[in-house]
Image 1 (cartoon, protein in one colour):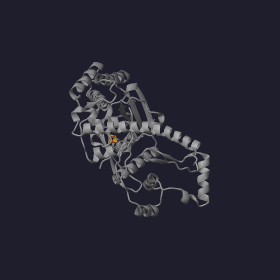
Image 2 (image 1 turned 90 degrees about the vertical axis):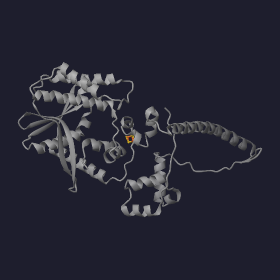
Image 3 (image 1 turned 180 degrees about the vertical axis):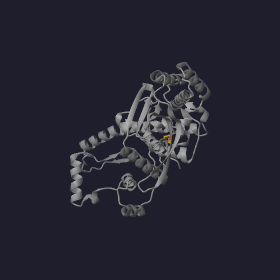
Image 4 (image 1 turned 135 degrees about the vertical axis):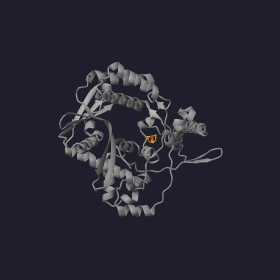
Length: 394
Ligand code: SF4
């Protein structure tokens, strides 16, 4: 399998999406409008520099004409908008503004003649054990303004400027730096240049060989983890809204079908009806719990006042038993820590503690136990399916 920065990022954001996209190779044709706009802006800038190489410098009007024509030709119903307070036209104009600002900023583009444009590069990387993982990437533009000095340019249409910290944690352009250094042994210095087009701002960074090596090792380690992964769990986050594969994911399938009348299948309405019914019963239960709490207090007051522990109803006897239990201090309280310490110290912990299945599962999966212990525990337990229902209100 080939790896790339975006594949690693997909895995980090949601292993399940990685599986659907790169292992099951499901293609939907859907594309978020931000990605769509970004790709057209990239295309127009590529065209600008290709024409420049041929001795023709596109003026602002020509750039606009090229961009608008590409938009008209490529825009389909498969392009979706998540932030629906904005229209496709808003995004089209935002992309155009990026291009026009860029054009004005760098015109007449005599900073350097690009060596590479949208160039595919291959970057073999070794992990700590010496295993090779093959990375690929597309460099938006590579300039060499003077002998031995190279600049890797990357265009971004994101709506936020990254912090210095985030930029320093970059993986994408740092891996490209490796590809450039390997392709051009004369490279004396490589600079990474991001163009944040929405803000008409450039961010630059130089990375020394230690930083590059660390990024390469981390990328290879992550590739190794992905190759040996057996589980690809869904990781829900706000990014789910932009996921093109929602209809193939159990976390979002039903939400997606309800929102897309054309995609509704048999059973979609039944799912909605089940969710509604559950919500209604939970509301009734909550109301009943409130009443029961008040009633319980009234009963206990009555019982204490009349010293009567068994109350005769029409068809039942209500039995009230009294008990006195220790009130355990809350987790995080100093008293709780002290209590636990004391019980451990005096060897009484095991008598009063209970096994918690969730904690046991994380201890097993987070390798908190050594291998022998893990194996021993696994041999003594069975696994059972469990489900929790919760209501999220809009
Ligand atoms: S919808 Fe969310 S959880 Fe499902 S695959 Fe996409 S990103 Fe992952």
